[in-house]
Length: 256
Image (cartoon, rainbow, N blue to C red):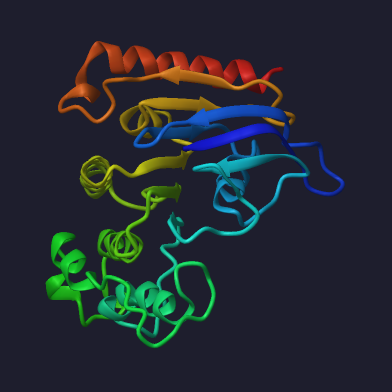
């Protein structure tokens, strides 16, 4: 699904974040991107989303070169991105209304274009029915993140990109939303790429874990984690061993 080919990127007057990186992510896989602050985790996510463009190389999704945001890629940020003056229902419906006006290809379409409107179904599915007419300021952090997820899934994405989506939540809410996200991605056959600085979260969510170093990243370190998302995995010796390995790799990378 995603092919990164000889990708390089850097900001002006700073070391290159990435140099000639190549990576393939298959449809339906779940990936965690792990690394210290400043290593380029969020930048890589933006490159996949089409919000930034490589200085060399390219990113393709389903064979299409990414030069701008694509309609079937969903991006969920740490601050939720909800419109504060709109209710939960209005926020969830926003993407459908925008797509109805501009069309799936980003161009204005005739009045008879009617994208599938399943906003109410996702509001119910994510447990937001009682909060549907409330504004974001009236919601808990978990409810706001559920609203952000609902707003994204209503557009039926095939790729879900998440940037530190659970970092501000309490432990119980975070674990519940992690499990919900994995369940929905499996059900809908959505490819998931999630950025995190938390080792345990990366190991809990990603069946593939990409560990980035401080610039410049020239080689990719990918760890297989096939048991991610299975019930009770986080209480197993295998999980704890992987977390120790990831911590060691991050410390090693920080000293290179």
